[in-house]
Length: 120
Image 1 (cartoon, rainbow, N blue to C red):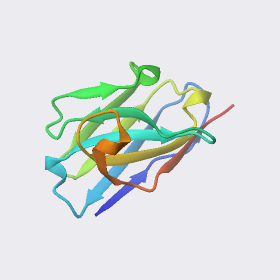
Image 2: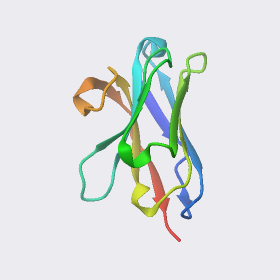
Image 3: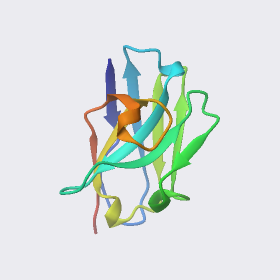
Image 4: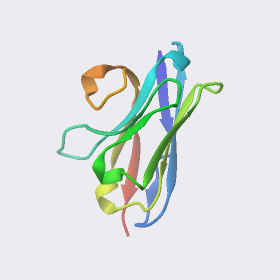
């Protein structure tokens, strides 16, 4: 099983980024997927999740209205479109595969993370 995140970068406040997570080694289309993030000195926190079908999504309050999670089951890839980025969005972003929800314990598979830094 592999989850490989990409797209992290150093950007300025107000910029946009799109993260991608390519999955392999499991039946991606049967798994709910999530994005989490971890800032230095803080616990890993929920960002967004999406059902296996793409029919339902959920977002943490700090990112609601700015971030959009989506997936392409034909490409075994989940995305996180991040707009209007703020310095407080700075973190390592992880994708995860498992059961729809906000708790890390619901997810069986994790990627290695991609760094997003928002700074002027």
